[in-house]
Image (cartoon, rainbow, N blue to C red; front, side):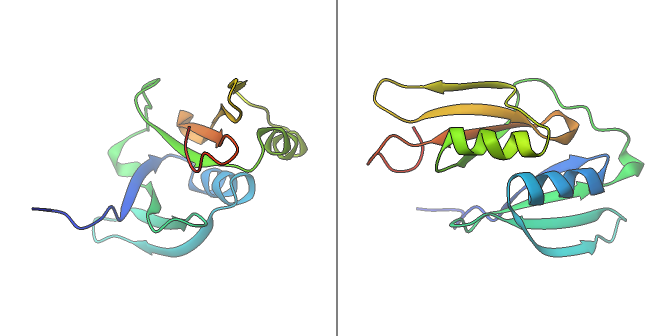
Length: 134
């Protein structure tokens, strides 16, 4: 018996909404699909990822204090066509991987970048004919 039907979105709270939106739209290529203020005063921005139904919710709520992201607690993982090409894209934006890329003997690999506020983003290049993930 399924209690929930599907994952709708995941929220990440941030201090600098403009810097964060620039990162997720310009660096990762996510698309803003909705923005509004909640009844309690937080500003919410919903982002869509190609080929995914789930949304990423970015929340700015200064009244709750500064964001403190604990290292290695949570991360988002996105599939990329090529870690090498994505690394070139990062370099064009004066960025680089924070860890990796690490390639596997069977092909494909993974690398990490840091989003604003310290959230970790994993980029995965799938092995040929392996499908998404690793």
